[in-house]
Length: 490
Length: 105
Figure 1 (cartoon, rainbow over the protein chains, first blue to last red):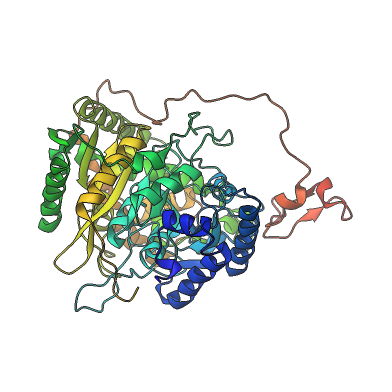
Figure 2 (cartoon, helix red, strand yellow; figure 1 turned 45 degrees about the vertical axis):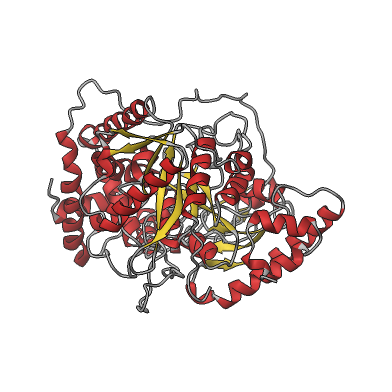
């Protein structure tokens, strides 16, 4: 029999429902994997005792006939979600040792559905990065390696630990957050499914804030169906987040179990054919279009003229919001405090020592673009560009139901690469940021391997609050691509 | 837009970040590089374009102005880096303080 850790969420649910395994046994099988693959550094905090306790309670609920949607399913939580009584660091020295006295809404929803937490995953500091190399707790290793090459590769970022944990079969699902691509790009790098819901679908309450108008929690899993199940549990209106959408949650699992795309109009944005993208990714994109066509969908060429401006506009909006959000880390109420001769020096010492290089860089960019005299030239300009980007998508969706694009311009790169010039690293998110700026849902689906044996993903982008069509298209592509590759040794 | 060392030092002060002197010049070069790259936005004509601050087109909800929680001072002060000071050490939820270095002489 296959190990319990090889099963998907849907399979685990069936196995536990048939009493072929208990939640405690399922938890133990996954905790063993955490043990075996600790060298990947996917977790900042492992919570085996909590996992056993939650699994025991889950078995008791099932015995009483009260099984939830994710009853007994082990999950890993990005260390950006506040978890009551469990250290939450945001990958930063400034929050090291911070133990929240409250639980985020998304994790509360997961526990209500019966899920079991095995630990808190590593991430780029405050979710700022595309490689997981900016974490105060060290980089995460991607379980995938190039064929015949032993160099360590990055899992992408910022939700790198959550993606690596799922790819290495340590957990069947995990949570991430996506501000400019932080779920979709690591999903592509790690050969798994990653879904960024529409802005407002999942509550941001209790999620450490980076860029409040863009941040959105979402799931990682190995199948589209599993991602839908996780999203189902995570979603819902939350009065504690004023931007949480007061909408009913559709049955995402039903959408994901229906790969019928006959007559579905799939938009292919011509501006996504950009220089610098690997030829293999362009070829894979063409293949993806053919697969959708073979499944009965109708490809349509569309134009999103302001695509190339999304990235530079993002690097005004996100740093501006981050510099405001991170003002709260002042050494007064929680987190690190480095003494100084007066209050101002205490602030400066605390923030200088507590924030890493990339975070300091973005706080400074944000402070600069918001400073007197520069606001109109930068921040207002970026918001106007954002309007044009949102308008582009609106017009494209008059001609199609969903868009198909590459997820990232390359496969996973080696740890330490692209670190010399910040802009080179930023370019990783060129295909994911436009949808983020417009608040639209996007999913990355693993479609194939490149010549080095590394996974590559394609992205679907949908209309606002139309995750159902996104999931349906993703299920069709998943079925056609039949991606079954596993990283060697996992 | 090219930033010099003095401007970077001024931004660092505004952001309450201690930046060591030897990091100012490399930081000025990096930030200038990022800002130069951002300047391609000037190619776009944004005359009469309404700025988009948030994609959420929901009207911000309002609620009655009344206390929804409280009496949890111990939780609020649990992570205080300088240690918490309580009004009444026998009833920590009666209230307390964060401590900071002296601000007034």
